[in-house]
Image (tube, rainbow, N blue to C red; front, side, top):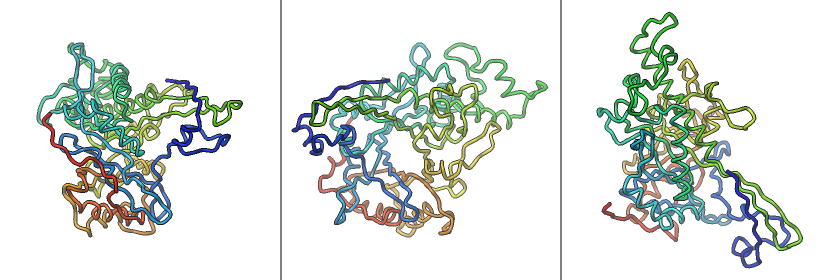
Length: 430
């Protein structure tokens, strides 16, 4: 989607945006600085910080409470780069198409976006909403619906639903979390999925043979079928990520004068929507490369690699020593360590602020973030810290000390409370 805007900047507006001198040629989009990069002490690698907020319990504005302590030559820097609002989930409408249902607390926040979202964005914090596969327990049947069960025919109208939500409420992107789909959303029961409400199988005969039979047409073992179905679901999810990234991009071209009406400058910016993926369900079976038949046209500039179409992959468990790196699958289902160029898209663990570890354990986690197995000669290159259970600083003053165990080790700076904190936690009957 492309937009063209012509802007005349009068002197008063120039001073509001930063008092640029006339004729300096500064683009209007450059007058709103982002949050300064937080860089690792070891290798100067930029790392960002995310807060997941259960909006039924906690106010997302609490993220503004936490800053880096200002030094002699530095101003106030927001500790968090992103806030994820939980949650929304997949449902089907009366025609059988996939749509997004907002939980009542999330609907309330989005309806009041000027109060709960815009203040975060004005601080440079980007706001995402979580999209789950559903609200079913793992033992429940579910709707035969999940982030890995949509084929390309279902993905396109679903992304239009995502686009409608962004346009209506003005947030910045999505976190896809493949949980809550119930048993039928995952192998081995996905082999029985049908299209919409009909009895027609989701997969055509050729695909069913590929998934469930060998080259001679003999049935595969249950274990092989399940492995094939995980790969198939991971492929569907991978294509959902790529298509979402491409369709939700927006390009803006501004024509503007900067104190001189005789000189007209233009500025073109592409706004990328942020996409996060939890490494759970089919999110743990993403393909490193999109399938050939689904790869975009070579001339579109689209990226056929999954890691080129999402911001971060989030390891959904507090800490897993067996899975410290981002592993994606090839077509044969073999795990591939995608290496330093992609590990900077990975959060190796989540940090639960409701169940804080001891100081020593927290510092050990921070050390692991920097070095493989505590070996200072073998550096990790993870790109993001992911926190859950964030409350206001007034409710739990110890949070600044706890988060500082990580920030001092990683960035050499402590976390403190802002002099202009957020609104605190709220109690709301939804």
